[in-house]
Length: 496
Figure 1 (cartoon, rainbow, N blue to C red):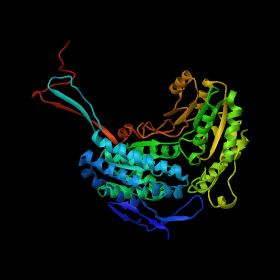
Figure 2 (figure 1 turned 60 degrees about the vertical axis):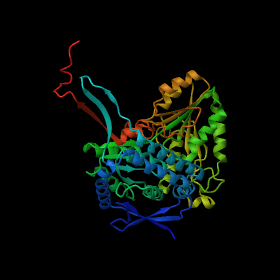
Figure 3 (figure 1 turned 135 degrees about the horizontal axis):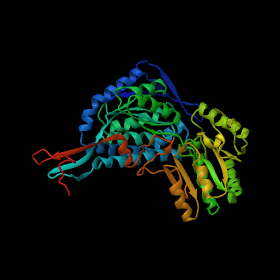
Figure 4 (figure 1 turned 180 degrees about the horizontal axis):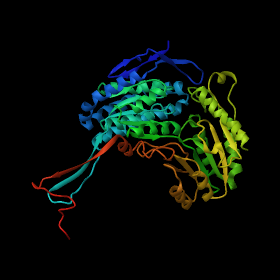
């Protein structure tokens, strides 16, 4: 008997006002996991109203007490890590070892942000007039709408929910329609940890009109979105007209650069992990490999060999290296790029096909694919494919490699394999990316540092680390004059 997943509004689990549902299925085999309530704009209205009612009491709760609730949530997550990971694998396909990593990142973020309940530092600075006090402090925005993707269905929601909560905001949480179960589990955990009713409200269902209504709702003060650059631009357009705060973490076309002085075997490990982990469905996936001509033949031979040996299957099976992509439409999008690549002159050196044999035919499996003879301006070298496909581009030196790296509209993650410290520092300086790795892949960001990218990868904000507090709070500057007389700043200071 499949589960039934409901919205969580004002502390109660409820169906949509329409009574409509949709199915949540396993992308590896098509098995039904749950029926899911399909929300309407009226459900969004109820969620926003509940969040607004809960706001004053929540923001006035001392931040250390808010942090204690988050800490308890982290403890519950830790106890349930394996169950959460296995449900994640069934819901969106990534192999269970990676799913455990996704849950662990959520645990790490929750513990880290819980500590910010006793920090959230402002500044006390000298005032320019006598007997005057000057300081700054953080103030919450109000109601935050968190719109999250399916590829990290536990970690990314914690990136948004935890800093929003610790700063004193209340929330409307709209997860991707492919991964409602992990969203329900996260809300259940926070409720169990003691989060007051109405502080976090969950609305399930596909985006489109529902998402637009959330973004334009007058009761929503800030929108935090992770997803495609096209959707991010649409949200920015809607919200900009209303002068709403928006934080967007968007696409990537990340590259690993391999120099001729690199440890090639180490680079291959990083490339395979970064290109094909989560079946390439990471915003930080290495969908380009920029290799020095001096080692290009060795790099290509080894990547192709590794890709051909990867075993596809259900992510819960211990022999599986590569799980499915998340949906039929995702599979069709990935497959559509192969003829585009060939038409432009690229060569399919490994993979290139949808898996249609045996049990794999029941799911959405695409072979791990390596494209060679790729030029930097080809569509497969410029557009985000979001699947297990990587394009190998050759370069003659570091300057050319950096130029190729920076030639896309995106700027999220990049990596350089080299043993030359001078090259390493030039790369760190000149790479137009928010995340830079040396002798490691393009994935593996840690929650204590800012996460996000440059150019079309986002709108200038960052998630994780202390930088997350900048998104979910406003600065308030406070001046206290205890001189007992009128003092005019900039005017009553004595001349030198």
